Length: 302
Image (cartoon, one colour):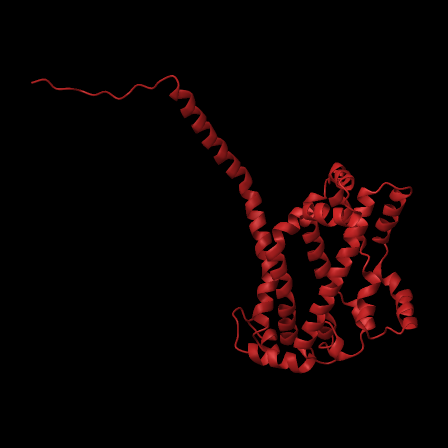
């Protein structure tokens, strides 16, 4: 009776380099992970520190103001959320001021975005004398402090009879220098040959702009819309000067009225700030991909 013995297959010359390559790749991956570990730790700490104020705002909005100054500080949500919400609504009519802020921000975003897109398209596409000078003037306006413009703009709105009106809040800042520059940078990379081909085919300027150029610039437009909406939603100084009627206040102006000379409703302020922050967070979370790609899309163009 014969017995058969099987031996392990010998390593072929072809399998040895593959094994060495796999081992070397694993070692390189481990080495990279070790080198990047401090970076990840720093980023994790920064992320936690950035989230802590928002967590404290949530906790503080569910407690009474007296609890926020007690010892120890509350670290878990309390049970005064609905009482704070009712007091907030009673003191500043919060639902109305939220609607005011939303309406003003939407109107401003629509018209300011149209102005920025058209101006940026003109500065990037058309060749005319003085184009560089005009772009320089637009960029210089970004260096002018807001405080310098308050008095002349207030006098203009008063002479027009627009004090305590929404058009006084929206119209003076429709031409946004940053928005114009952002869209100009985005349109610089657009192939001019496509525009010229559309003109040869008989398309007018509006049709060329609407059907050919705008679809390509969607990331930059999304970034512009988000930036414009957030800037108007958070605007405080100019609406504070223009609006005198409480029912026309925006959220930042209304929350400012809750700060009294002798007593400050901190729990109400925290709840109002939390509710005012949620729309911005939702807006950014929904459009964050377009926002980042739109900003990066125009970051390396000259």
